[in-house]
Image (tube, rainbow, N blue to C red; front, side):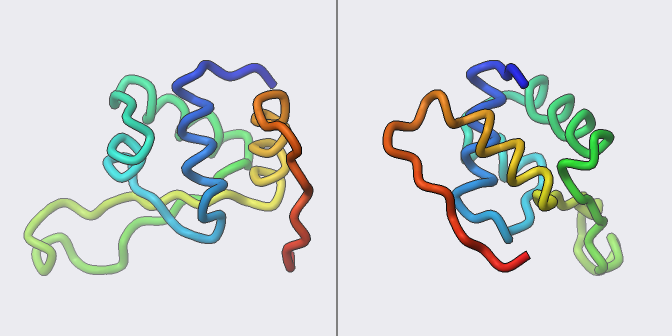
Length: 99
């Protein structure tokens, strides 16, 4: 899978804390990329089963803002993300995580 440099930055954010959920604005801030990069990436990876998404549980009126859609890597997403970054990481060691 070939990804743009900006998409690789998003992948890296997910891999830094693979169990954490991120909304699009979190990813824009952490990866320093634009919405025009983040949202197409999220849609594509979710459609491919590489990301799992859910809406915040709180009601928008309680939050005082629209609910955020939160994304997290799936097991196959972790594998795809590692593979995408592998050519750019020297001495990368596989991690042994509980699945």
